[in-house]
Image 1: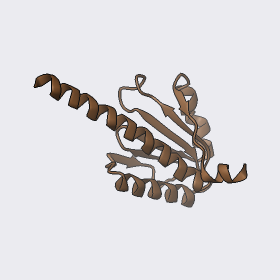
Image 2: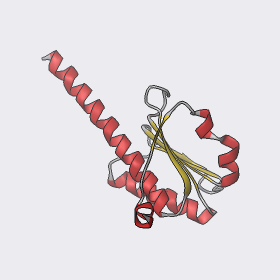
Image 3: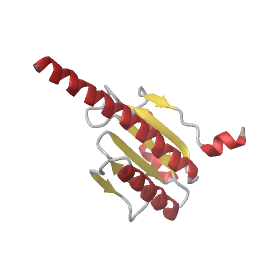
Image 4: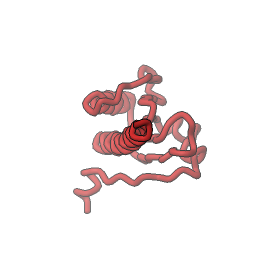
Length: 138
């Protein structure tokens, strides 16, 4: 009986990780559809004790960055991801949305270049996302 509980716990954890991955991909697609640039998903599983995925995007304006943040927040609610915290919404230089397993970073160009999370986590696996806009161009 104890063994069954352990397997069940393992299966739930595995399912949560797969769900986190799909949420990260969906968040990246929202950013792409709202014209963010340089969108990257970093798979930090086994590299970061704090989170499993970073979604990093560069916005084009304060208003656009807040819109992307709002739409990703709505997506999180729809998918059952409760936001643990957020920061930077008012200043719109670096908006951070923390969903524990997935952390979304929406930068303006200057802050993206300065903090360079892509280089900081350079050994992380990158997940490529094809947006509808990209697919339509082909």
